[in-house]
Length: 175
Image 1 (spheres, rainbow, N blue to C red):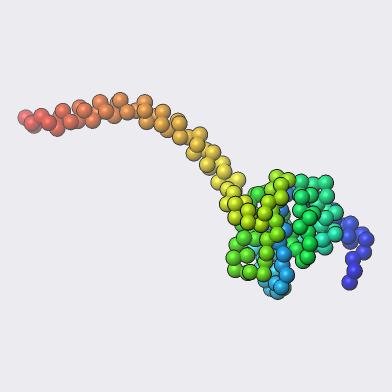
Image 2: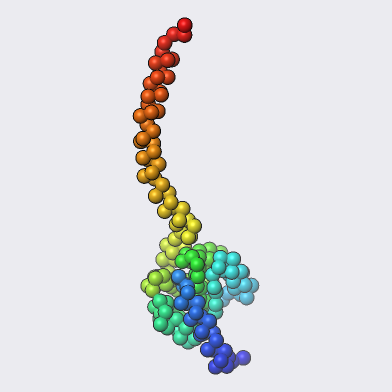
């Protein structure tokens, strides 16, 4: 059943709104996948807060126009699925790369991060990006390192004095 003009406008508006909020996007070809496999992919995407959408290429090109995913227009060819990461830039890459390991029919065509089109092989690099909480914990450990070292340095003379007194005490015979 063909889509009406209003339906097409609604799809373009929805995808454009997502593209404006998303941090990264992935285009993958799903040729030959069964409905069950696509349903599994959608379930994994929902669990990771990734928006997955199959859109006609002409509508997808209009939707990503004037967004930082405009670079994806040239690879929107054939049966493709768009995956947008809203909160975590690596979430879509993790979902797609994990699913592609078990299903050879899902082929990554490109990744867009920060307005740049990356090759399909860069999906693993994007998938390894830390989540927000992981990045905060890494930052806190970097900040905490010098303070911990300072505390150890300041405590060392006292600890050395205590160890010396204990050694002198142990070396004297008990009387």
